[in-house]
Length: 271
Image (cartoon, rainbow, N blue to C red; front, side):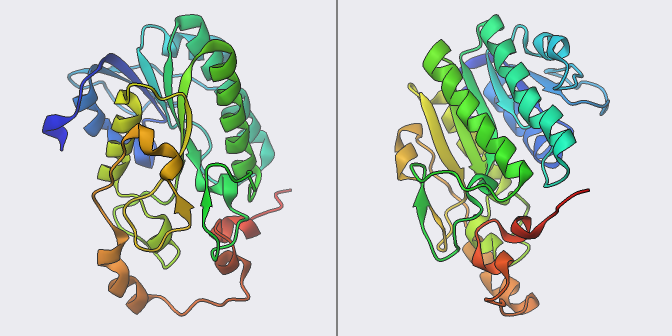
């Protein structure tokens, strides 16, 4: 796949580069550009060939503006990635994404791939199938922050013409860890395929797309995003027997089993 990745941008910015998905995408995204700028809040090593590193706290508007200056498009993975107290989520995910879009506006960046989350819709039931037109039903403070990001990115598209793909990432790991992930799993290669599709489709607009591989069991209908051109190649199905063998039968009275958000629906409150 990597040998045929379309390279339509000279310089891309990847935020959250020191996180799990950032590390998985670092080498893959070099096929999408001539220069990959990497950013996180704390130092994470030296730049390699074809890379730049710009450290920035997302809550610091001036630092974010420097981070964005001179790039052609942004893949935004940065911020708090788990459920937790509202204070850090407010700074990194809410103020942070405002600063990011303001920097994009000021610097003329017209395309963003925003790592949203399945937790925007975590309070739909696992017995339901939803699409991008269903209203948000966040399952916690983290999901609320991602719902805010989706709304803010839509505003910046409507007002300023900044195209955004809000990628509601399911569970992106080397393989599914449990039965829930048989529905939500997204391989690292499919994540790269999805980001590539969002970066290269001729007209992106403001699009919500579910980040999932070609899993037989799914709660999400991705038909609203056919114009993006994402065609997943991997599937959780090959792991099904192993997952069933090592995990107990689900307790249907458990909210983590009833709702799509899994354990996030039970997290907190944080005092």
